[in-house]
Picture 1: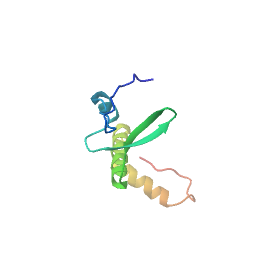
Picture 2 (picture 1 turned 90 degrees about the horizontal axis):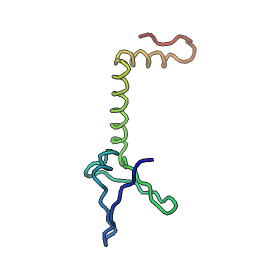
Picture 3 (picture 1 turned 45 degrees about the horizontal axis):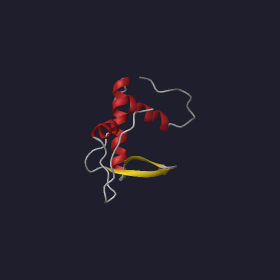
Picture 4 (picture 1 turned 90 degrees about the vertical axis):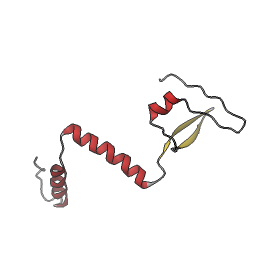
Length: 95
């Protein structure tokens, strides 16, 4: 389990999320967070408020994984073409 962080609650109910924690979870200025009550505590996570933001995050992770595994745009196009042919064909796409 990760070491805990401490933050003080102001009279307005505000807290400052420690910089090290913000950096660890990738929280940036202007981001929103979701808060979930859990027992006597609260769990929070960065909120993706728009489908475009969620798609962009997914695209970045996908591109990184493809690059790491050496998957090219041509490989993706061939896989899509193969998938569109339907399950009638039992062959797999080639690289």
